[in-house]
Amino acid sequence: MKGFERDRERVWEIAGRVRRARSLPEAFRMTVLEKAEKPALGEKVGGRWREFSFREVYRRVEDFASGLAGLGVERGSRVAIMSANRVGWTVADVAIMSLGAATVPIFPTLGPRQVAHILEDSGARVVVVEGERQLAAVRGSGASVEHLVCMDEASAGGGVLAFSEVERRGARSRDPGWEARMLSLRREDVATLIYTSGTSGRQKGVILTHGNLLSNLEAIIEVVPITDDDVGLSILPLSHVLERTCSQFLNLVGGGTNYIAESVEKVQENLLEVRPTALLVVPRLFERVFAVIREQGTANPVRARIFESAVRTARRKYRHDAGEEAMSLARRLLFGLYDLLVYRKVRAGLGGRVRFCVSGGARLEPWLGEFFYGAGVPVAEGYGLTETSPVISVNRFEDLRFGTVGPPLPNVEVRLSGEGEILVRGPSVTPGYHNLPEENAAAFTQDGFFRTGDIGSFDEGGRLKITDRAKDIMVLDTGKNVAPQPVETALANTAHIAQAMLVGDGRKFVSALIVPDFEAVRRTLGENLPAERLCADGRVRELIRSEMEEAAAEFPEHEQPKRFALVPREWTEEEGEITPTLKLRRSAVAARYRDLIEELYAAGSSPQPARR
Image 1: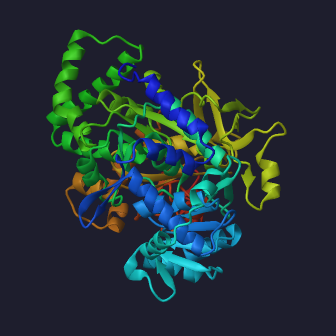
Image 2: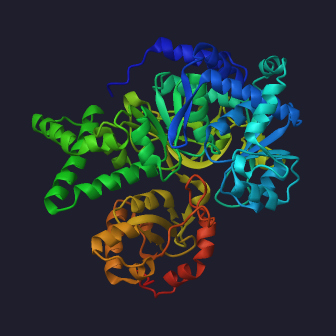
């Protein structure tokens, strides 16, 4: 694709800093020395955006590190952070690492039982929390904690230190040897201990070293067209390695500016305020933007036909640029018209100046990627795991191929086992799990490749394609395998389905639990009915049945749901049904709706949709 030529000298300059660094704080320091007064981070303070320069962030890191040292944090310590994204998160993270300690991120919505396991297993004795909710979770965990530090000053006191107080203490008693000790860190030192959210079972602590993360950053900089002029918006949780590596650290070592979204609910507003040039997102954002544009563009039959033609034309633009088909003069003229009517609204909704997006965390539907490309918002889908720091592969913007996650990074080896499992080896791969020797033995092959648990294949261009999680594959009683995620994604991309989960392991056929998009259904019916009544409404069932059959028609017959049941509320992280990165906890959903699933399969020998 055209338009992604890069200044190779600037790329190698940034990559060179990362290559020379022996730790993440040292790589950050190199950027500070070069771009001291440039804005590094921004967040809303009192309703207005406040920017923090690289020099200012570095000073705060030194102050907070000195304050932590006064609390007994030293090389080899573990310090947990349990907070939503904010500048203090980044300050604490880099400060902890600068002392030779390891950061232990905890998702801010976790409950006391999960927090207890993470704190006890990691051995963290100092915990940095956001506010009252996180304080309650830590206190309720019963874990032995020596110091609690709270970012919300109103929640401090009574044995809880304010974050700002730790900074002030550090500023008053700065250690003149702090920087020298930071520069003595080595790549093999542990930088962080990340507990995987998982889809079932107890969380495992993934050990990542400074070298793991630096090697991943170096390779990302070589293949993704990021520059030190880029502006980002931090949307995904910093507790997750994807956001932490590819947003926080990529900007800190690359010299870009990263603004922190106020919340998921404020993302649309923040996009218009910040006007980012580069975005790291999950596919759900594209699905939501498309749903809004589709709703606006299908208000009447005439507009609906125009919108459908605009979608087809955008996809044709992608295929033309990819060299897959020619684009006639008439189509090019039509493309220009649709750019005025439709595509510019897509770009405007993302702030108006996005050069590119990287999508990860879940499968991006190829047609959706093609549409956004044609609308002027190129999206590169990537793939990775916590255990790989995280990026394993990513599409190259000069040669996007939707439906794949691109070639492996330059410093990563990928091969497939005899069963198609993706195996990975390279400097970004974890040395292992914390306190789990048996898990470690099972996680690696004899020649050192990490077993991802994902099933995949390579296309003719060496691009990786993900089929599904090995452990999620269902086996019907006919012996046929079903990979549920692609079907579920297709269902959730329809106009009136918000979430879907296939069931049928050990059964004769596949069924689906479906959460309707209740707002979309109400608009279609023109009636403001409660969710329970909508799920029982024959018109809604027929609407969902029609969309389900159409969306699943592209899949093999045995993968198409034969029955479905409607669920009257969205699956949430708070209820334990999805992970903080929006993946389904299949076992939790299946357990909650066990009776409903049994009803689906007890509805008679002829597979008709269950009426629920």
